[in-house]
Length: 277
Length: 303
Image (cartoon, rainbow over all chains, first blue to last red; front, side, top):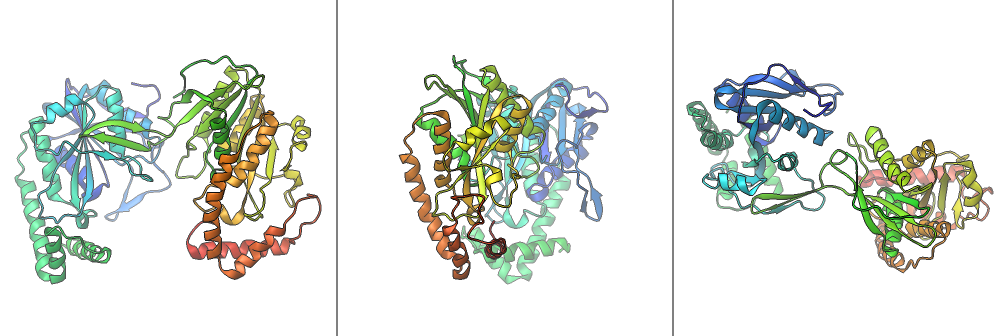
C-alpha cells in the first residue's frame, strides 16, 4: 500500500480474484447506500476496513438524519463466498485523488480486485412507470467487450458542459484505468420526483445486473415486494390527486412540465411517501 | 505529485514570470498575453492529480477516453541576454470551498514553481494580480508594486504609472495579496529569490463581476515589459479591452442614478502627487462604498 494512506484494516479478507462494488451515500434515490446495503445484508458482508475521515471530510460537526447523529463513513465489506468487496462511503469533500487511490489500494493489495463496479444515478424527466435503464461507461475496450452480452446502454457519448465538473465516479474510473483495473460506472436514471426519496425499481435494476454478472444467486422476492409497494403508493397519489395524475400522464406521453408543475409534483409525491401513503 | 519537464532548455540568467487566475484575471491575462506575444515554448508542467478536481470528461461510445485537469504549465523564451520562464496556472488549488489557494497545497505548489526556477538558476520572480481600488473604469489603472526586498524599491520607483503601498492613501504601506499570486512572493523571499508582485487596479464596483479587466492587464504589461526591457505590441489587449469595456458600460448604466453619480466622481481622482489629499474625503469614500455594497446586495451579486 502507498505510504501514509489513512486506511485501517481490521481483518485481512481471504479473497483471491474479487470484484469491487462501490456505492456513495446520499446520491439520488439513495441508490448507493441502499444497493450496497442490500448486497451486504443478502451476502453477509463482513466489515474489514475503513478509511479514516480527517483528510477527506469536513469535521465541523455531525449531520442529523432520522433523529440520529450521523458521521461520515467509508467502509469496506468482504463477501468471501462470492469473491466480492463492497465499499460504502460518503463522497469525500477534499483530497479526492488520495481518497480514491486509498480505495483502490485496499482493493488491489488486500482483496486482489480484478474488476470495479461503480454505482451512480442521474436525473430522469420520464415517469416512474417508464422501465428503468442501466447506462454503462467503461474504462477499457476489454470491459466493453465483457459487458456486451448484458442489457446495458453502452454507447453513450458525453462531454462535460462548460461550467460543470465530472462526477467522482468518472474520476475513480479514470484512476482505475491508470492502474489497469477494468471498471464500469453504472448509471440508473431516477425520475426527478423520486430523487430525494428511495427508488426500489432503480435498486432492482442495478442489483439484477450485478446478480447476473457476478453470479450472486440472490433471491429478490423482498425487493420485488418493495417495488410493488412503491408502485402502489404512487398509484394512490395519482388517484387521490387528479392534478398529479395529469402531470404523470403528460410525462408518460413524453411531454415536459413547467418548472412550477415539476415543483408541485415533487412536493406532493415526497409529502405523500414520507407520510407513508 | 511533482514536476514533469518535457525538455531542459539552456537558459541564461532567466527570470520567472508566474500567474494564476484572480480578480478580473488581470495578472493571468497580462502574463499569458506576454507569453503569446513572445511565442514562448511549453517545456513542463506540475502534475495536477493531487491539487485539483478534474474539469472535464470525454466519453465516446460508452468508453471513458479522457479526463482533463486544470493545467499548471511552464514555458520558456530566450530574449537575448535575459531569458524568461513563464508559469501559468489555470486554477488555484483551493481547499474547503475557498476562492483562493491557501494552506498546505498552496504552499506546496508555490515551492514546486520555485523548484523549477531554482533548477534553471533563476534569481528574480514576478507575479501579478489585481488591486481593488477606488477608481473609475474610464481612467487608466495604475499598477501597485509589492517587492519582497528593500533593495528593489529604488528600481520600482523608476517604473512609470506604478505605486508602492506606502504611496496609497490610508494604507500606510500595508495590505494583503490573497492567493498564490501573493504567496509566491513570500515563499520566494524565504528561499532567497528577489520578487515583485505587480497588481493592476480594478474599480471596486467591478471586482465581483464575472468579467476580465484587460485595461488593468495592459497597465501591468507595460510595467512588466519596461522592467524586463523588452518591447511588446499591445494591440491585441486593446481590442480585448474595447470588447469588455462595452459590457462594463452596459452594466454601469444599470446602476441606479444616485449611486452612479457617486461613482462618476471617481473619474476625477488623480494621483499626480500620491501624498496629497485626494479629491474625495474619507467620509465620502465611506459613503460611496456603502452605496455600492447596498446595490450589490440588492442585486444578489458580489461587490
